[in-house]
Length: 281
Image (cartoon, helix red, strand yellow):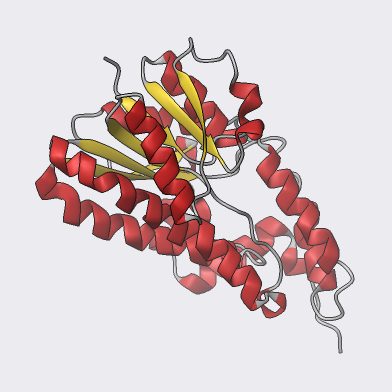
C-alpha cells in the first residue's frame, strides 16, 4: 500500500504540482481545496492515485469531514503538506484588521488546525511527516509584504516548536521556503497592488515596487522545484528542518543572516528600485 499524503490548497500552482508529483512517485494523494470543483484540473492525473477533497482549513467541520472521507478509504495518513495560503500585499499602514485576520486565519491558524487534526493518527502509528509551506518572505521581507511576511514568520516559529515537540513520537516536521515561483499566485499579488498606486502617501513607492515585483514570477522557476523539495522532505530518513526552493536562493538567505540590517536595507532598496524614491516635501 502506498503512503498516503494530504495536501491542502491543491487547486492550482504549487499545491497542484505537489499533488501530481507525489502521485507519480507512488504516493496515494488526497488533494484538497475549499471546493472540489476547483480540483477538476487534477482529474485523470497522477495515475489514479489522486483523490479530491473539499477542505476549508479555516472551518473545523470541513476539516473533520475531510478526514472522515480519508478514513473511509482505509488510508491512514503518513504525510501532511500544509500548502493552503492567501496573499496579503500593500502598505502596512493601509492594512485593515480584516486583512490581518484573513492572512493569519489561513496561513497560520488553519495550518495549525489541520495539523492538530491529523496528529493523533500519526502518533498512534509512531511515524509521519508534516511539511509546512512557508516562504522566503518569512526571512527576507520586502516592502509592502509585511502582513504576508508576518504570517510566514509565524509559520517559521510554529514549525520549529512542532518539530521539537513531535520528535519523540516519530513524527518529523520540515519547512519549505519557496522564493519567487511562476504560478498565478504572484500575478494575483501584483494585481492587488493596483489599488495602492494612487495612494497619497505610498503611491509613488508602490509604482516603483510593482514595476520590479511583477517581473519576478513570470521569469521564475516553475512549481516543480517546490514539489521536489516536498518529496525530499517526505522520503528522507533525516529530513532537513528547512528546504529552500529554488536552492540557489540559499545564498540570499546566507547574506540576510550575515549582513547588518542597514546594509540589507540598502541592498533591497537598490534591487527593487526604491532607492530612487524621494519623499515629497
